[in-house]
Amino acid sequence: MSFCSKCGTAVKEGASFCPSCGTGMEAQGGAQQLYTPPVAKAEYSSPAEDAEVNKVWGILAYIIFLIPMFVAPKNSKFARYHTNQGISLVIVWASLSIALSIVSGIASAVTGHSDVYLYGIGWGVVAIFGIIRIALTVSILALTITGISNAYKGEMKQLPIIGKINLLKV
Image (cartoon, rainbow, N blue to C red; front, top):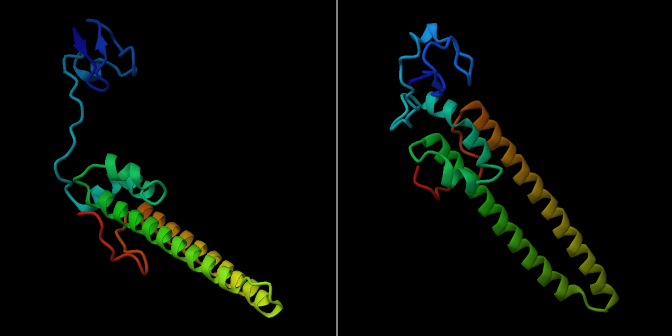
């Protein structure tokens, strides 16, 4: 039995076309070639090839960093680099968010007395921490968009402020 060299489907002797992909058998020399599945490369020939092949992993690293961390090719410096940037971004965001919540809660508890003057200060503190939380969210969103844009362009640029954090071996 012969196999299609394009998709690997078994082809009956004398068939003109592959029943699965429709490739002409004459172009394949009568389907005598055996299908060879693609093999993962040990090394990429250039950083540009690495970026082109693993661009999706780079983009996903800023959206759902766990998937590229465990599934992306370990030999891809591009995917590992952007996964590191995505993990750093999530850790910084979570740390600052938790710290801001703790400080905001303490400030609200300290200034939230029934005394009229202190009560007004309490609302001011809550408003200030609300503005800081909005600024943090907008900053993290801007860094996420910057990272996705860099990955889409195939660039390995550091994110501003947090880009030098290395959590993964790249």
